[in-house]
Every structure is written in structure tokens, then in C-alpha cells.
Image (cartoon, rainbow, N blue to C red; front, side):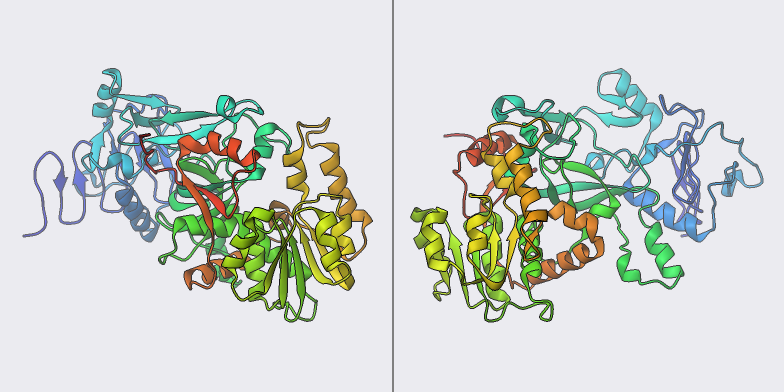
Length: 522
């Protein structure tokens, strides 16, 4: 009647678990891994996790509940003693010999504990490890059953021109956990494959990439784990009277997007919290959400650079030219330009796809042009208010010639130059691509602008976050319609790199579904 359970572990009416590993009513875990109240776990021996108290590993829900209860009761990590109540009341525990932020109790996700009891003793887990049924790896308790965890990622350990030979599928029987206080572990639902991934894999990217590396520069997923300091900025902003909208609180299970340079083509990824964006938790399809991050964000911010200063969110009455109009960014730019009020949009694409583009826009306000600059320039020379060049076929000369007296050219074609080159130059990126960037950025005048999505995030993180939320809002309302070219599993990423380099993929974004089961060949 008082809620007391008797047996191997006793549940007292005040919320106290007694027995193999002690859970106190105030949120304190006793044993090898001690929960100190503010998110800090203390351990005596992180290599073996062996302790006389025979502590337990806890489910994620119990850990989360304990953290909230401990914070409410005012526990502090600075105390060297563990407070006890119930049967241990009045007896101070011995001070801990060491303090660690390894968080051994959070090293296993909810997925890996589905067929477990809510608590499993360290002794039992160690016994399984010695019998070959589990492992202790880098301070993380794991089990070998791939059906339980199934953590996979695509990896390349050397820069290579042959993705099918140079990229491997790696499987692990453990999942990552926060290594730094600002880390967020994401269970990935969708990521993408793009030309940029091919460029990075070849070693032609202008920034240093550490090897081994996992391809994929974005991802959509849910929060699986967070570091100690992830939510401190939000708490500080609220207490100091700042704009709390700039500080997002992240909780386990929150749907999020992340912008990274590598790491997306995996089932789990660890990302710094500054690169994680909360997204609406409605009925947004994860594949379409991946399109927003990989293509619509670039398209929206590129068009913003081309808008008149006194008309922030409109291209009303303007004529727009987009080179490479059937690629992922090209399609998104066409759609957003029409939404912003453009009168007519010209798009250069291969001749065989002209009918496809017209079918997508039956109103006749989108006009396909040949891909070759010498063929499309006579139709638009000196007439365009805005040109978005994603091809850089002749050093941006033809796009600039297409501008009228007040027109704006936005150059985003350096990646295409990199994709066309056969190999890296002395400094990584080929000289032609470096020259294209330098020319557009410094030598073509004030009416020529450049854009790169990671650079935009670094320069204006708040603007980037604002625009991202706006686009996800449009998606949740059905105001934009992302085009997904193909959905593939992780095993098909190397083959997709080959197809993309051969120019076989067009008409949308290639989305990787890391939990998708591979279909058997018939």
C-alpha cells in the first residue's frame, strides 16, 4: 500500500532503490559510478569499472530523471562525499579517489538496452565480457550483438580517386558518447551525398581534413546524448535577461539538423552544439529535411545577396538566370526565386532535360536554355537583374555579360570547377578553382558576390540560424517541395560517388537513409 517493493532490489516509498546498485531518492547513484547531482559522474577505475559497491548501468530515462531530481535538491559536484538517505542515513561515504567526466553510465543508448532489464550490474556485464559476450572499449561498456546496436559508418582512410576501393563500411558494437562538454550525439535519420563529398574524398578541398574521415557534410536526426555544458548558454541567457531565443535547449529525442564538413554518412555522429539546429517536430519527412539543409539553405541565402537593399525579401519584377538549373541547388534556387516574385527565371541545363523542367513549371515562367555559354548568352545578354552561376564554365565571364546595368552576379561555381579537375594541386585545391574564387571575390567589382554555406555559417551564425528556421517552417507548412533524386543506404554511398562523378544524377538531392535495409538483388 505504501509503494514498497521487496526482493533483490528494494523500492522504498520514498523512491529509494536498495541492493546491487543503490538508487537514492535524491537522485544519487551509489557504487562504481556515482551521480553527483549536476551531471558529473565519478569513478574510481575507468578501465575496469570494478568497485566493491557493485554498481549498475542505468537506462537513459532513469539517468535523465535522476539529473532533474538531483538538481532540484541542490546537489553540487564540488562535494567530495556522497550523500545518502534511507538505510544509509547518518553515514558518510568515503571520499572518491578521482573524478571523471567519462560518464560510464551514459555509454549505452536506449536502443542497446531494449532487451535488457532496466538495471544490469557491472559484475554481470564484466562476466559477459570475460566470456566473450561483451567488451569494455575505451571506457565504454559494449556488447557484441550487432542486432542490438548496429552502429555503422562509411569511412575512407586515404584520399582516393576510386571510391569503391578507397571507401569501406565499418560496423561497431558501441555508439559514441560526448567527449567534450559541448558535444551532442545525434542518431542520424538522413544525410546526403553531393559533389562536395567527392571533392573532399579526393583531397581537393581547400581546408584540412583529418583522416580517417566519414563523408557527408550534413545530417538530420534526433538527439541521443548531450555533454555537460550544452544547455548552459540557454540557462545563462535566461538568467541574464538576454534574448533566450538565441539559446536553444537540447533534450534527448529532440529532432535536429547539423551542418558539418564530414561525418554525416553514419548512423551516429558527434557534433559541437553550435552546429546543431532544432527543427520542427511535425510531420516533416527526414529526406526532405535533408534537402533543406543541403540545397535550399544555399539557394535562399544566395538569392538574399542578389536582392535590392531596400527590398529585403522580394525579387518582384526581376529576371533571374541560373546556370546548372537541374542540380539540387539549381532546382531549389528556381523554386525560391519564383516564390520571391521573379517575373521570369532562365535555367541552363542539358538539352534532354528541357521538357522535364517545363513540366515542373507549367506556367511558362521558367525557360530552359542550353548548357553551353556561347549558346545561351545571346538570349539573355545585358538583360538579367540577377545571375546565380553554379557552373563557372568560363571564369564567370558569360554570366557577368548577362547582367543589366544594376544586376548582381552571385558566384557559387567553385565546387563544380573542383569536380571537373583531375586531381589536387600543390595546396590541395586546383589552381583553376583557387583563381575562380579569387577573381569573383576581389577582381570583378562590387556587383559580383560569392557564397559558400560553411563560410556563411562562420561569418553570421545568427543570420544562418534564422534563415534555417524560416526554411524549415516553409517545409512544415508545405510551402516548398524539395526534390529527392534517390534514397540509398550506407552500403551504396561509394557507388553513388562514382555515378555522381559520371554525371548520372540530376533532378534532386541524393539522400542517405542510414537505417535503411539493403534490398537483395534479384
